[in-house]
Structures are given as structure tokens and as C-alpha cells.
Image (cartoon, rainbow, N blue to C red; front, side, top):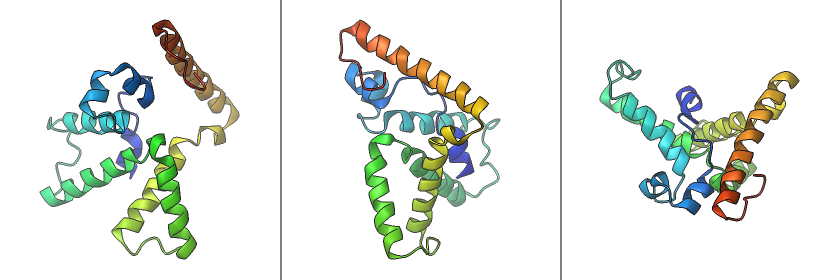
Length: 160
């Protein structure tokens, strides 16, 4: 989960998934319009780890490394806001029946997915000086996308 949190926005180009789909970018084509950025973050990091200098999983067995990869991909993909309603629905249904979230792998991964989602969108809970810096950068990123959309003659996406 810690690794997923560290890489979940690696090599983020500053444009959202919908923008990539709209302009039919290379990444949108590569990832078939599905969790484009999240797949890209994972793929870039795992490609880096093919180099022995960056393979932080080198001391694990092959089976352990495969499990880590599987979990990291699942957690990073859960940060796709396009999947938010689905994941929240699963979470709401699950905790309504039982709060024991450690008995199955599925429950453990759901709990970790919720934790990474909360960490991903928690910037408004940071100390004010950090929040203001972060929100300013985020607004700049959003406005740059909106300017690009406007320049292309597209409808500007909400909040952009």
C-alpha cells in the first residue's frame, strides 16, 4: 500500500483521463480509454523496476513480487475518479454488513483502496500553508487543461 501511495501519480502529465480520451492521445489508445493515467503510473514504475538499480522488489520471491505488483496495480487503479462511485458503492455495502475487514484478501484490498483514495484527495485537510500551495498548483493544472480545450475549440470541461 505504501508503494502504491508513493507511485500513484508518477509521471502525471497534468491532463485528466477524459481529456486524453477526447483528444485520442497515445496513452488513451494504449490503455483502451480505461483508467489511462492510473495504468500509465503503474506501467512506468514497473518498467523502471526492470532495471536492477531501481528494483526495490529484488529481495522478494517471484510469487511475493507478483503479489506486490497485483496489489499495487489494484490500489493505483482505485484512484481513478471514474471508478469512485463503484468503489464507494462496494465499500458502503461491505461495511453495512460487517466491519471485520481483515478476514479475506478481497476485504483487505478494499480497505487499502479506500485508504489510498482518502490519501489521494486529502489535501484540503493539510495545514493551511500546504493546502494553499497545493490548491494553487492544482488550479494552474486545471486551467492549463481548460486553455488547451478552448484552444482546440472543444467544450471546456467542468472546473477547468
